Image (cartoon, rainbow, N blue to C red):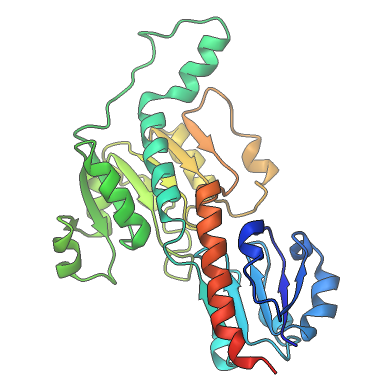
Length: 311
């Protein structure tokens, strides 16, 4: 009998659609039990995870029966994909299934940071009346710089167009024909730093993108932009980000992802409610609607792939 392990939360209605002949173990907190995973993973043909389950080489070497990994999300930095490729383990991400949710987060964060809503909210609740003492801005007419031009960036572009925003993108792996077909100007990374009022990051974490945003890049930013990262922690050097904010190189930031999750206490100790920033717990892509889409998609793909191995 095909055995499947689910190590993180999954939409319960979608779960009912897993093939009835499969033996399913659903433990939404299993990702945190390293001993359990090391002991039990040799018994499973498939595993369904989110981003907290670390499927590194050490663990995968114990997964002697594993044929399929369903990723309830897009990023694959928690999975040793090279090992999987070399050992015939198929990895299925939920590409595009949470793109709408993340795109809404980007636009919402852009508006909130430009309007400095978090700051004026705190001051108003504290009895102040910062009607004219805090300068705010409109999003209309601003330049949005997208780092990466995949599914989510295209969704962000569609929403941004409704606000009369000019969009540019940096993505060395996307053709000029592709960006031209979406009426977006393809530019260099330096041009993003020079011209963007809003910078939104949509690339995977790898050797090329690690600390892509650091002191060197922050000091080159000409327009004191707001920075939004809903991609992966580690693309921004968080220490350098705070320095850039306090040195007025940037005017605000929204982070949904962090180098350490939950967030490092050292970083949090420097955040105050008087700062123009938004911190969220890696949930930009986790809404009721997206969770249902992601879960149903991965369940469907799990059924399609593993039914070929049924006895």
